[in-house]
Length: 114
DNA sequence: AAGCTGACTATGG
DNA sequence: GCCATAGCCAGCT
Image (tube, rainbow, N blue to C red; front, side):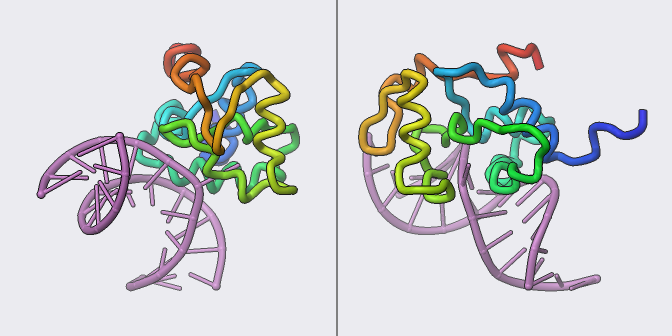
């Protein structure tokens, strides 16, 4: 191949994030691991920051940190856009934190078999 | 080219 | 369980 995958670590992140089902959430670390770089959790955040560059819509609001905290909500438009998007999908949030995080947690490595 | 930054995570006290 | 520190990878200045 060619192209591909190395086209960007970012695209890999986008591909994974786009596959996160509604009402479910994932963590930066899990996504980074699914991309082949377990330590690149920070890069995942950076990638999502540039997600607008991607052709398709990337549900970045479904990506949280390891404790289910909406750490990236400040990078969204509006004040609580991220929270509203998640609640709109049925995710209960209190104090910028997902209540049943472990229950709705979606691990790409586990679900996608990576 | 070298250093800093960051939507993180793991470990130690 | 909370606070502080270190490691981490890729992009940006």
